[in-house]
Length: 261
Image: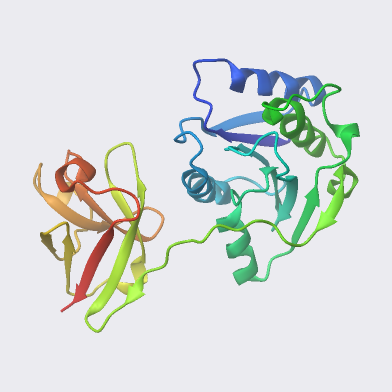
């Protein structure tokens, strides 16, 4: 049974997500739909890209991911669909699929990109403000129903890519950067776990220091500022049973100094 995922910045108050599901089920009534998130901060393409990147690998081959964080809707920005590895991605060509594209390039996996310029696979009437309903949902449904990607439009080779943050090597360790502040206030960084696992480290963030990396939240006392390795394999700063973001006053993009002792 085909699977479609949805990720948007629409929220759930206004019915936009439900409308997209209705469009999908009219075209592909047997498809399963999974909601990755509809709470992406409005117009925050990077946040949407990272959320999709963290979830997509856990879906089966052939999954169609429809992602709509689209501040450029109604402009000249391309509508696109892509085959990245063994999955499909549908949405605006604004960098939303950057992490998956970069990973596929590094792994030598197949990549193909299609400009969605064939209206045969859109809804008959297309608004200038809701391409999630009028273009992306029907295209994703047709893909899930077995229509070949190549029929959806014109191939291209230059998708828009975001600049992803990377840790900076220093004489004493690294300057990492916060990439995600999750619902708990945990602070994920861009420093891979391999750079600190099993090493004696000192972490500095907003004038505060953390000595060493904890195995998990429960190994320290409530209220304590800790560092640990998150479920995606990156260094994280957190407060046990609290919010690292609130305690440190940190936000996405802020630096975290990691000293290898």
